[in-house]
Image (cartoon, rainbow, N blue to C red; front, side, top):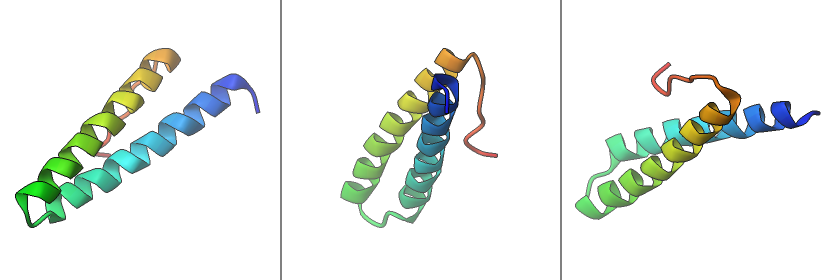
Length: 63
């Protein structure tokens, strides 16, 4: 596996984690859980966007 494939794999994993956090945020029933999910979502999103920039690609977390 070359470096670009590894970066794509990491990006895809971050994208899946971002989707998981979006579901957790939707399901959160307290403010504390919402805040925690929101912070994790922002972190996952930043990682995915950085990897998209490196790859000069764009992914849609809603797809």
